[in-house]
Length: 375
Image (tube, rainbow, N blue to C red; front, side):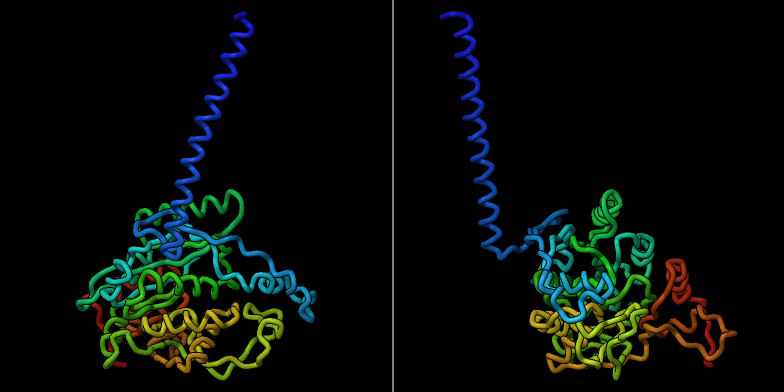
């Protein structure tokens, strides 16, 4: 055999061997993926029981171009138009999951108070302070308090990558973050709530009670446990939804307002009663009822109002608790110290605190030497 023919024969044989091995490896690769999808179908896309940095996802939600045909659409602000284009979107890839946070669905009954804290990726300082203060996971009065932060994504490009990495590092250390791949914004707060409730139904369905609140509130979680334990004949299996009650109001039609809602988003001029979204307490039973109702109610960007709409559809109502101050704590005189711990040791929740104020207040109300007058 001539050298050039021998070389050609050798190269040809090598080529077919590589192709054969590649096809074999590819077949194994495809088989493995088919097995994964089969397992997912069998478990209804449930995430694994161990922590994972990327659990499962849905197809990307496409823009609803028909929204542009809504009367007056072109006159609406850009963020309202974008909301209407994507209003139908309810499923997004989950980036961080803690399916074992409540010990699994069956053991979730052991969680007495689940702290569900809405947080944006960049709010690292707030999350760290809460972990050290009122959101510290602990046993209080013989019952367990657990904590979870819920978040979307923020920024774009390298900034988005950095913030996602930040949450991933916190997640690895604290095991307390749920994150979905949607834009974390004011108008997506309702979406964040729905995604959490879906997670709860799957992973923590028997938790007794929940605090649903922002990451800039001061919450006296010790007092919350006392209040919830005082509920007669309600261990979380009956309706409870308590906070700063707001009623007899409707959509704000002023374009300059952060809470602007045009008729294209909500036609009615009134809202049902609801509790301010800064923070409210609800039973596990009520949380799951709200999720059930949400499946047939169009998303409204104002999340606390949306919760009220879900309650109304279920024939339930929120109640007022004088210890929840989502509009701040009113004082009788502007000469008084607005952060005197004596004003805060008996409340449940007050909105609008800086991280250092939360840290200081938590330690001051727990100071055994704190003395407060009766007036």
